[in-house]
Length: 234
Image (cartoon, rainbow, N blue to C red; front, side, top):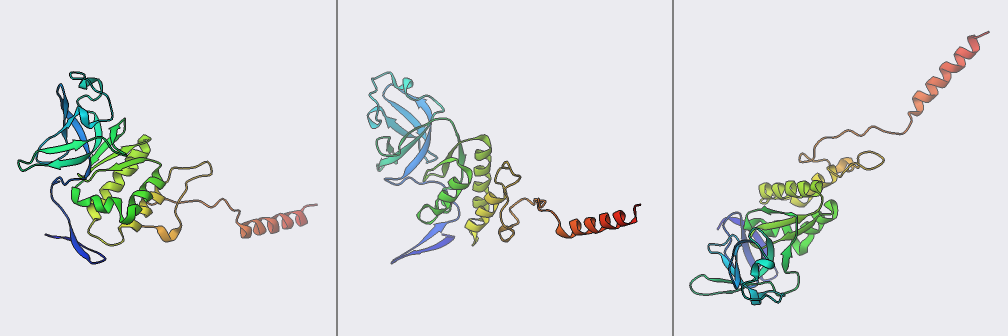
């Protein structure tokens, strides 16, 4: 397997650079409703098979035949992989903290192998993205990322995810992402809010900030000129 070496305590593993999502028990994933039946919904979670979500696996009191009152085709949900059987059948549940239906926003798909880089160590990368964009970001182990917020925030998060996808195997990824986010901070009341010069990076679009401070040498020169004109006048 070609990937990034990860060493944490006595455990050494490799984070693959590519590959499709293979479900594992306890994975938290994002899914899209593709079909509605009398007692369950079929979810597309990017796995080799669709995952049925039974009505008993939700926090709602659902009656048989009323499933379409709660979820419809195209709705996005965050669920947890509960079980896998020998035939590859996937069992998921919506019962649990942080699970449920996702309203609004948009889903961005990335390689499942990039998920650890999007989250970062102890959630550091994800915290950086949220802090600089004010967007709601939910990352599934299946490589689907739900982003909610203003259109501008969603666009910035999408661009960050692209940067991570293309540079996941390189060092200094956190600095690269933070440079982009600082350089694209929305304009405030007092002009563009730009990062310090030492944060400049090739991923950040070039901008120019004109100084609002007066030029003292120019002021002195103007004063001298005024004095001379005053002395020459009758």
